[in-house]
Image 1 (cartoon, rainbow, N blue to C red):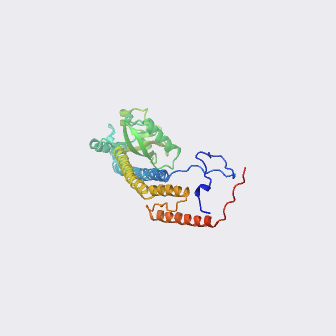
Image 2: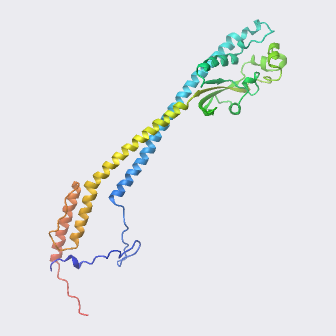
Image 3: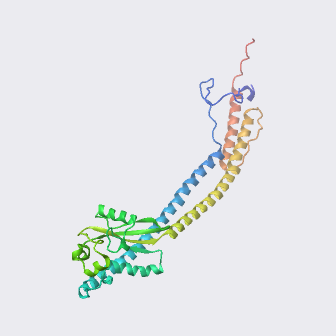
Length: 329
């Protein structure tokens, strides 16, 4: 009996709905994504991961380098200020006993000398600052800000801390700060900061008997705080990260257009043409229905395989026994 595709019952359009069962108890397959939609979703996921990993990682690396550079610069300047203070303490302060006692000489006070030298630097570089605020200062110009008090309390709570650093806003500017504790480790400091009766009369005449006294050995009385500008470095980091993100976006766009166009030309359209031809071939007994051979090599192989399957099916159905006639009603 010759093969007739019309003998094979086909489901009517809309015969089965998602979740319904056929007569044989199986559930019809749900509608799946097209190849184009799947590729677009994959490309989008790759782009988002690349953007987050590339631009985000690049920003973090640049930010870390900017902070590291600011920290190194702050350490160098703070070490310089401390060197001036140490030199004054070791070589100038001992000469105080040889000076007349009717006048107070600030030039022999290590803290005053270090700040005076840095003010000379600050005159040329206003964005840099160096202060030595104390909770109970002799000179009221060294009174602490709330932030200085917070730093001092942190050093008091944890004596093992050697320094504190970070980013803060100071007068509308973004600065990197480096702070170290001022701890009383030299008994000579208590000459001027122990009790008023031990302090030089010239010091009392200038600053009074109220401020700057009551210090004790081992006490953290203040901080040495140095600030360097970092706003430009952070802005440059952000600009470079945005530039990289824009570059990644351009690369993604070119890649997206090239890949989708190639897939449409070499895979999607040939596959749709092959599916239409295979569908037409399955509904007719015409052996001369041609299957398209276009696209990638795998599409050629698939078309050949479907052709061989049609031929094998026709042979198998041609050898099958004829169907018995339907009984009369």
